[in-house]
Amino acid sequence: MSIDEFKEEVYNLATVNGRSIKKLTDLAEQLKDEAVFLVEIIIKSIKESIPNTKLPKFYLLDSITKAVGGKYIEMFAQHIKSVYPVTFKQSPNSVKKKLLTLFKTWYIYYPHEILNTIYNELELSRFERELLTPEDHKKIQGFISSKTREENKARPAVRQANPLPPPMS
Image (tube, rainbow, N blue to C red; front, side, top):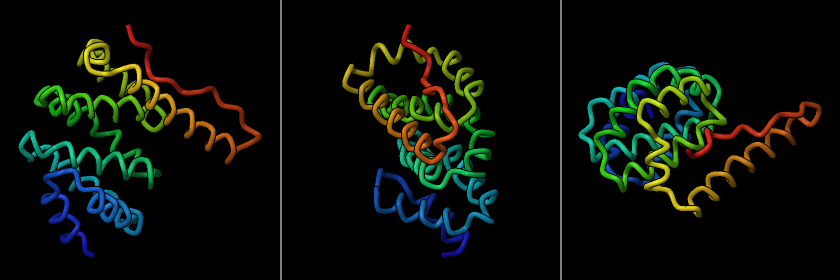
């Protein structure tokens, strides 16, 4: 698949489709040398999409962040502040809950100062109280803990603190 085909697939990603997201994530892995272009395509598609089609693109961003990582994380981090707040504000509560769940898991990938700025700007603590259940918080913490354990196994000589999202107010 070429970059143009990748772009077409991203722009056509209008519903949450696990198969398409996996396919695009795998392609992002294969095309790491073209990461700057792929990130640009994803960010631009988020900005240009109508509000009800942005969530699948965030799931793609999330999938590439978690499955591929590396320079994709650095590049997405430069754009998160320009796309996440706008999308969050435009979204109904059902989508806000999903976006907030993604956001909370990003603390083990993206710089905390960027995420904390967004967290405070959007007053996400209020939305956490309103939208996330205790079960949601358990799932988020379970994901963070499992990823932290994986990192510690990969680097047994390095002891890392468990990175946690800001506490609920």
